[in-house]
Length: 113
Image (tube, rainbow, N blue to C red):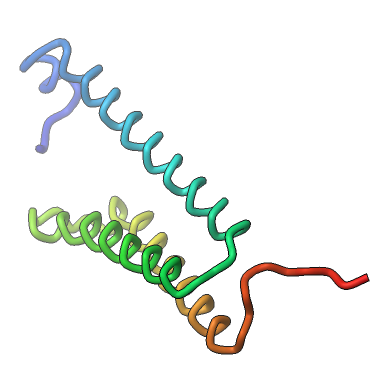
């Protein structure tokens, strides 16, 4: 938008609190989704359907989050770095999960006494 805080305030004094609320809501939703996926991945027995659901949702989420910036011409790597890093970690973890499932790991560790 190429506007500073004063420029946004000139449009409407309520615009800055609206943007802050929007970002906080988005961050809270993202954090909640991440915690939910972490608990499911940690405690649920892995299955092919679970892996596919996580993989598809991750590709859709990271693909849209990163792709929309390029579609809009906003390609500042400093701004995109967290999403790109998150996407790289996601792809790496998905690869490890796929490899583990092919080797027969169930995702739940059971200690034998």
